[in-house]
Structure formats: structure tokens, C-alpha cells
Length: 600
Ligand code: GCB
Image 1 (cartoon, helix red, strand yellow):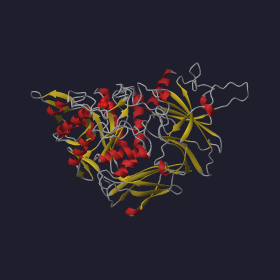
Image 2: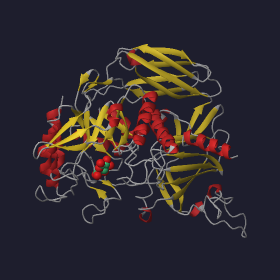
Image 3: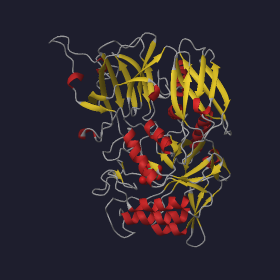
Image 4: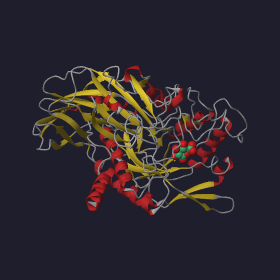
């Protein structure tokens, strides 16, 4: 028995962190019905709606969504009269009493749905932070772990023509062994933070596909298609009419087929973010996408896009909603944030510190912004815990599955500022291999650690020699010289060395400034302090020969529980170049000037 339990525990540790979930690529192109809107909600800090008083799954759980049968019946909850919350949306910024709340909230939506004969139905969640357990008409569909990636559950044969009760237990408690773990410098927004959709697909449907240039080639598309359903063997056509491409493959008994086609294409780039209509058609399913094609590679310390060396003029961005605060999710949010990045002169954005909503990635692609996409492996992680690794690997896989056709994404970042130990190195090396297996075409990076060597006299030399640097294609590095590390003048006497012959992106630098607060360049929190830091940073950065990009911290102020200073921070990290209301701080213009000087 003991042995069996050990085997079961090991199996659970290496299996993906969710059960029953399946990916449906390119959700925007499917026939969907939105379940967004007002949902009934019950706040449940003791998880009373899930566990009984012996901590067993309750026979009276809220997921049953029942009403008293008669006047004698005791039911201690009532979704019909429970308060409302908007979906998509985090709960913290919608209800004052939930501002600091971390725990379970139950969400309920009622809907009618009559699937057409010969179709299958799925429930799709753009994201739920952090753990979601989904129930339809009292039956558990499955669990999903990880706050920033999509998941879905099949409901064919379970959904009724009318009066369906969809109940989701969303729990944003932080866990030591979670990804991310207990400590982050961002708000732990809980809830159904992205779209919830009903998806209708044919009995056998195009579940996923890859249509991108073959690694190392600018004129060959290499890809695959994957069908899901009872008739896996089919003819599937892949067409790009504008490029005169049309090819047909026959899928195998797993519904899978690969293809390679020669292609004469106008390549996607920030200067010309060309996208093509791509049609993937099986015998009775057709999915349309807009896809760009480009090559990305490194040569020595150069980053080459379509064979040309370039400087990545970027900025780091949190998924914080402009103007209203809270988690961003909409196309408007994306347009505002990315519009500011464009105005600053960016050709690149770092979507920190977790996968952002799909609108951000697709809009960046349309606007001609290259993207650094990041995993939530941040600061401390339980490197030795196999379940933590499985969870991290699953989140990374879900992020790649959603975005593998986005030409804008040039870098997968696997970690941010993680402390160097053997266990961490092993974990990240394994994860980097996992990423390259899932997607051999893009570059792998991470915000690495560096350390300071004494230089000659007053001079300081920062050395990039993090052992994980050997495993990435592009070095990322966060430095806060002049803010956490000395005073601004230290920037004037700092130099950089790397033990690697690889390109560097300075993935963070910056200083807090409250918009409208003025002082001299040594007054903390003033716009002038931040401006002075940016001026000196630019001067220092310009002297790093292997520097190929910058993504200063950060585009816009964002909420963080680590930032309590009254009247200045008020629970905001103020390193934004733009305030929550869109006011540009003085440093914004320093960066704009720097990027003008770096423009191709
Ligand atoms: C960092 C982190 C980032 C923080 C930032 C800060 O190094 O990567 O998440 O928000 O510093 O402002 O301290």
C-alpha cells in the first residue's frame, strides 16, 4: 500500500497540474458564445462551500447550486441573491472589501445552450488566478492551476438546452510551492480575469496547428496540424492565398500531420508588421488566422531579425489596466499600453512577469512590437519539488500552445532574478530544454543574476557570470544602480563585463517617481530623481559593447502590496514612466530621446 501511494504521488508530481483540460488554439476564430458579464459570487475564506467540518469534500457543497426544496430544508447559501462581480475582472479592484482578499470566491453563471447535432461543446477560460475548480450542473469538470494561461473542459453530453449552472471555485491563495511562490512585487489579483466562452466545434475539429518559418530558413514554412475527434485520419488543407500557398496533408491515427512548403513571403518586422490570412481546413472544420513570418537568431553578441542586426528598444509592462487599475484584459487596455510604448519609440516590449492576455500579444504583433513573453518563475521557487517543476512546465507549455503562431514573440523568458544554486540551475536548465522541445524556433532568455567586482579606484565593474547564462540564447539582466544600489552618481563609474559571447538585454533598471512630485535629482520619489537616473543609465548603457536591447522598469505604475509608503506609493510601485492616469513623467522623454538615437 505504502509503495502504491509513493508511486501515485510520483505520478501526480510529474503529470501536468491540471486534469481534463485541453487546448483549443486560436479561440477568437471559433464559434463561441460569451459567458462574460455579471456573475453571482460567494466569498468563502474558510472554503466552507467545498469542505465539510472534517475537511472532506462536502455533500452540501456550493457547487451543487441548490435551492431549499421546501420550508424545512436548510441550505446556507443562495447564488440567486448573492452579490455580483464582472467577468472578466479581478475581484480586488471591483469590491473594496476584497482589496486585500486572498482565498476562495465562488462564481456562478446560468446559461442555456443547445448544441447543434454533430458538434461538440467546450468551456474555455482565458485565465483564472490561481486555482480553478469547474463544475457544470453539480458535476466536477476539472481543476486548473496557474493564473495566466487558458484552459478548457469538454461539456458535450453534459450541457443542457436550458438552465445550466456553471460554478467555478477560484482560489488565489499563495503557496510556497506555487508558481509564482509567496513573494512577488505585484498584486495577487484573484478571479476569472479573462474571457469565459462556450465553444462549439465540429465532431472532429482542428484543435491546434503550427504555421511558422522553419528554423534557420526565410523561405520554407514548416508546421503541423492536430485534429481532435473520432475521425483522426483526414485530409487537411493549409492555405495562404496571398502567398499562393496551398498544401494538403493526411493526418495519422492520432490526428497529427507535419508539412513543409516553400514560401516567398514579405517578412514581419516592426517596420512592416505584415500578416497573412492563413486557413487551416479539415474535412468539416475551418480555422482562419492572421500569421506573420520572420526569422530570429543570435550571432555572437548580435540579435538578428530577418538576418539583420538590431537594437531592441523595449519597455517592461505589467498586466495592469490603465486608468481604472486592476488586471488588464481588454483590447482597449492593450491599445493604450502598447500605444504608449510606441510613442516612446519602442520596437519591443517585455510582457512581465507572466503570460499576458492574448489581446496584448496579438495587438503588439499588429502594431509591430516584438515581444518577450515570460513565465511566472520569479524570485524564490521550490526548486527541489517535482510538483513545482511539473506546474512550471505546464504553465510554460500552455503559454507556448496559445502563442506559438505569433511572429511577434521572439523570446521566451523562463525566469526572473532567481538566486543561483545547483537546484535552481538544474530546474531552469530542464525547463529551457522543455521550451526548446516545444518551440525550437524562438530564443530563450531569463533575467539573470550579476555581481559586482571592485574596479580600479572608485570604479565598479558588474559581471554577468550567472551559470544559467550558458543555457540561454540572450542574456537578460536587471540592475538598479542609483536606486537600490548606491546613489545616481554610481552609474557614472560603473562598467559591465560578461563571461559569455552573447547579446545582453538590460531587462530592468529604473527608479520610483510620483507623477507631479518635484525636487532636485537627489530627492527620492521626485520626477527629477527618476529623470536623472535615466540620463545616467543611458550614458552607462551606451558604453556596453554587447548590449542589444533595453526594457526599463516599467511602462506604467502598478499595484503592489510591498509598497505601502503613504502619499507616495499608496500600494503602487511608482517606477512607471507613465502614471496610472496616463501622465508622462520626465524620464519618459529621456527614454524617447535614447530610442530616437537607437532607431534603425
Ligand atoms: C525587480 C523585479 C520587479 C520589481 C522591481 C522593483 O527586480 O524584477 O518585479 O517590481 O525589481 O521595482 O523593485
